[in-house]
Image (cartoon, rainbow, N blue to C red; front, side, top):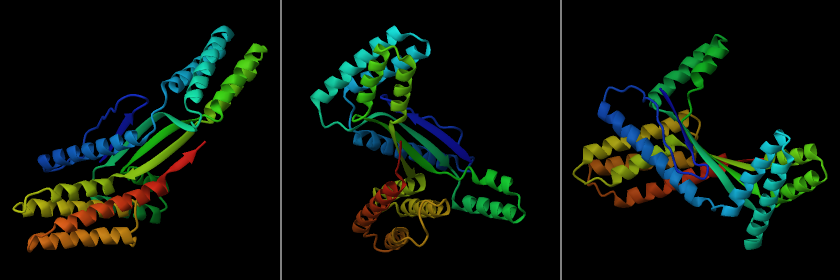
Amino acid sequence: MKKRVLISTVMAGLLLCTSAAYAKSDFNAQKNDTQRLQNVVQKEATQHRQSLQKAPQEISQALRQTVVALKALRKNDTKTAKEALNKATKLFDTALKNNPKLTLVPVADAIEVHDFTGDAKLVKHIIKSAQDLLDDYDTQAARAILMPLEDEMVMTTQYLPMGMYPLATKEALKELNKGKAKEAFSTLVTALNGIVIKATIIPLPLITAQSLVVEASKLDKKEKDKALKLLDLAQDELEKAVLLGYTKKHAPEYKMLQKEITKIQKEIKGKNIVAKLYEKIKKDFTSLLSKHEAESTEKKR
C-alpha cells in the first residue's frame, strides 16, 4: 500500500529506487502506473535540479575543507584543522572575488518520494476506519493507519549563506591560531547550523493527474476508450488529492479542473474536438501546482 523512494542528489546524479507496488489485479495497469510515477518523479526532479544555481567549484571544495577541519578538531588535530581552514578561506575568497554578489548558494539537495499507490476509494476507507477508531478513543490505532496517507515529493535543498559562512571560517582560523581550539570548533558548528534548508512539497496525485491528461491529449481521436479511461484515472487522482489534504474540494482551481475534465470527456464522446480544451486544462494544472508549491515551500535555518 505504501512505497518510499529516496532520491539523493548531493552534487551527484539521480537515483530512483522503488519498493514493491501495491497488489492490483491488472498487472499491465500496475506496470503502467509504476512507469507513469517514475516518469513524473524524474521530470519534477530534473526541473528542480535545472532550476538551481550551480555552486562554484571553489565553494563546494571550501565547504568540504571546513568539514575536514571539524573532524580534525574532534581528534584534537589542530595542524590538519589549520591547513583545512587555510584552504577553505582561500577558496571562499576566490569565489567571492569572481562573483561578489553571491548570497545563498545551493550545495546539496535531496528528493524523497512517499508514494501511496491506492486509489481514492481506498483512502476513503482508511479515513472512515480511522474515524471509527477515534470514536472508540483508540487514538494510537487510528494514528497508525493514517500515517501511510502521504503521496508526495519532498524536495529539500541546502544553501550556504555566503554573507556569513566564509566569515565564520576565517574567525575559526583566527581562534585556532590563538590556541582556542574549543572556540574554533564551536564557531564552525554554529556556521554549519546556519545553512539554510528549503523544502518544497509536490503532491503526487496532482502531477499524476496532470500526466494522465497530457497522455490522453496525445492519443489519436480513434482511441476514445483509452482517452476516457485515462481521464477517469485523472479524476480519481484529483479526488485523492482532496482526500489527502493537498487541495480543498471547494477550491476554485480544483473545481475548475474537475469541470474541465468532464467537459473533455463529453466532447470525446461527441464530436471529439478537444485540442483547445486540453491546452486550457494543462495551463490550469500548472497554475494549481505553482500555487501549491509556493504555499508549501518552507525555509529553515
